[in-house]
Image (cartoon, rainbow, N blue to C red):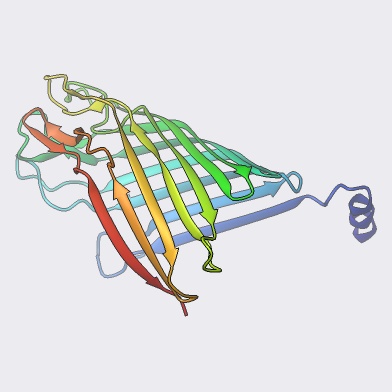
Length: 270
């Protein structure tokens, strides 16, 4: 076996690499779930070559729901299971990843279609879709980073007027440009800017048919090193102060998106 691996390496074909991991968590102190896994994950990754790998993950979840609905009945726990399959590639100046996911949950709490002052559990919620990520080196100190997700989240509970999951868009994406440069201080500054897109999505679980419109907002940031240990970071979200609806419970309870927001932070590393 050892001689075979050496021969493969000499021919320029590295040995195949397979890695796997499992994780389980239990919540103690609650008689209803004591000794039972709250979260379980099993995953594996296979390196087809130095540039290409494939992966898969499968998991289960169990989470208590607190409170009760309009009828005073306590909510049952939320349970779910799902899997994902994907591939990632890395070549000179280019990194890409593509993942398919399929998740099913039961007893997910959402706005009660008959009384927005209460929550109600959805019988079953299925979320499946594709996520794509890419990073491209444009020049020595320029980089582009993009992400796109198509998510089809639907319920099968006919007590709700719509099968659309609340506040979940079918399409969302981000695109950013990152630039690093030395202004003469001997330390690299980093600036970035880009756009975030969120598609239209359901804004109510009742018969109003409310759909929140899609929106685009611009973000920018700068990281300025003051010393080897200290770095100042400044961020601007919603640079052009766009007005948009971020989320909602129903047609009369809609959260507006935050206006132009500026944040500054100081990071220390020792």
